[in-house]
Each structure stands twice: as C-alpha cells, then as structure tokens.
Image (cartoon, protein in one colour):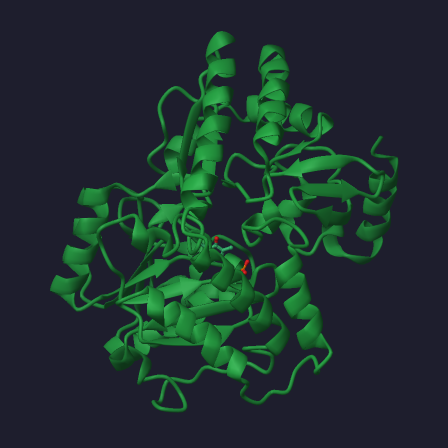
Length: 426
Ligand SMILES: *Cc1c(COP(=O)(O)O)cnc(C)c1O
C-alpha cells in the first residue's frame, strides 16, 4: 500500500540527502517511509500510491483554507501570466503590507522576505543594529529557523550561553545566544541580571515547535517588563502562530505586544513568503532608509504576494473563521481525550484557534524538558496507525497540528472513530 512511496524514497535518497529537502519530512522520529505526495484537494492529501489522507499538517501551517483553494489558485494563475518576478517594486507588496499594518497597532511597516528563517534572521539583525548590542535571548524548544546563531543547545548550568546544536556552526557565532527555559521566570530574570548586552528576546508566544505549548501569561508579562527595563527589543516569532492562533496570531490572544514581529507560513498561503515588521521608528533603521542592510532578489515576489494577499483578505472577511476552526479542533480533541481515557492512556490535548497539539503524558508540558518525558513510542504507534487509516498528523511529538476550513464535521467524526480504534491498540 506504500510501494510507490517506498520506491520513490529510495530513488530520492540517491540524489537528495536523506531523500528530503527538510529533515522532519523523513519521518525519522516515528520511523517508516514518508508518503510521497501526488496532490492535495481541500482537506485531503493523495500520495503516489493513491492513498488518501485527511491532512492535519497543512504544509506545516500555511494552508488555512486547505489545498487548492479556488480564490488563491485563481489569483496565483492570473499573476503568473504577467511574469514570475521582476526584481522591481509591485503594488501587490504595498497591498499585502497594508493588510498587515491595518491589523496590528504595533506595526507600521513590513519588509517581505522568502522564508521564516530569513524573517527571523533579519529581525535579529535589525534588533542588534538598533540597540547596538550583540546578545540574543531565546528559549529552549522554540524554533526560529536554521540560521547559524539560532542553532544552539543548552550547555551546563542555567541561563547559559548556548553551544552550537549542529556541526558547521562555529561556536563564535552562537556565543552571543543565551538559552533559557520556556515559562521559567526565575531563569529569565537571572539571565537579565547577569547580562547587559541583550539586543533582543525572541520567543514563540504560542510555541508550536516543541509540540503545542502556549507561554504562560505572567511569563510573557515578565518578558515584556524585563525587555522594557533593560532596553532590549522583544521579538514575537509569529511565523507559525500568525493568522493561525487568531486573526492577529498570538497578538490577538496574549496581553503583551512585541517590538518586532516575524511572519511566515500562512502569510504566503503555501508560497515561500516571510516578513518582519515593527513601528516606523525601528523600521527606519533598515536599508535603504537606514544603515542596517537586508535584501533579497525574489523578496516580495508577485506570485507569492498575490497568494498571500487573497488569503489574508479571505481570512479578514470571514468574521467567525477562527471560532469555527477552534470549534472543530475542540471537538476533535475532546473525542481523542475520551478515547484515551477509556483506554487509560495519559493524554494531554491543547489548542488555540486553529493550532493544536497533544502529548502522551500525565501532565501538560510547560517546556522542552517536560516534552522529553512524554511517551514517544506510543506517539509513533499512534501516528502510524492513524496514517494507515488515512489521517495525516505531524510525524513528531515535537510538532503542532493545524485545522483548516476545508475539514468538515463529518471528517472529524470519522477521525474520532479512527482514534477510538487506535487508542485501543496502544
Ligand atoms: C517554521 C518556523 C520558522 C522557520 O520558517 P521557514 O519558512 O521554515 O524558514 C521560524 N519560526 C517559527 C516559529 C516557525 O514555526
């Protein structure tokens, strides 16, 4: 039933490292062969063997309207016919920037890039340039893309400077990156007490890269306070939570506001788009207005902008989109929880808006270390059994899940029935 995917995977491995262009796709943490995808259609994915899956990955977040949304498709095709890229300004960029500026009262200007990684990398350069400091404070388990200075892991001791988490990253490039525990106020305070060179604190205010773990409200309040007291810029990395947790992402859910916001995923509706944004004062430092250099040949690409623009306008016009999506999420998770309880399986579901997640453990994890105590074997089994039944969830307990508007109530009922069968096998 996976014969063609298995063959395609072997073939790919000969010419692409690990057969994939992003490591998570290789299914390493659950084992087995990743299905090779032939096409998407609404809520569904179809693999090269003809298997059909209800998709809770949604390209890792971007596709809030599901696959092949007609309005987005139409806008892309129309734009493609006028040329793929000009390397010159287009009105589409201004239009998309305006949509974002209108939504956020802490954002006056937006610069578009091509990925979340690039957005964060540029936001950090901006923060460093503005504050004339070097230090970056980040949290263990938050992912901000694969740029050198963010690939850090904890050394020994608390509130430590990180060491590279990947070969190929010189220690010189991570020596300014401090790593603290998520949701741990004491550690955060200590970090600020012992460092006076922190340019920015970067956080996923609703974390989706260590499974789904929202930051505590008082923790975010402390982040904001410590940044203000120390002249540090607060960056909310909303690459995943943006237009997912609510219309204005985490900003629409938590009480604090960031100085710089990064976007990706939903902002491009499946096309490669990232962005970083802030008030006029901060953004005035960016080239060509200011001295902080940042550039991109394909940045603000018209096809990508057209997709993002139509998608954002659709999102904005649909007043109860997020409550509708969250109602579906809650129904699904309640069904899963009931099935887990009936089988005495420790299960911790959680969600905000269209983002959700679940852990196989007794207590809801608050940080990266807690996630490590969850039952990974059980997760792997759950994943494969659900996949066999046609339900495509992220292939790692360290990833979040996403609801899209194309998933129907009937899809959810069927998925809960499948989970009932599967939980009994765990
Ligand atoms: C996905 C993600 C990134 C990286 O985005 P890419 O487009 O994969 O480079 C950065 N930050 C967060 C919070 C993300 O979820």
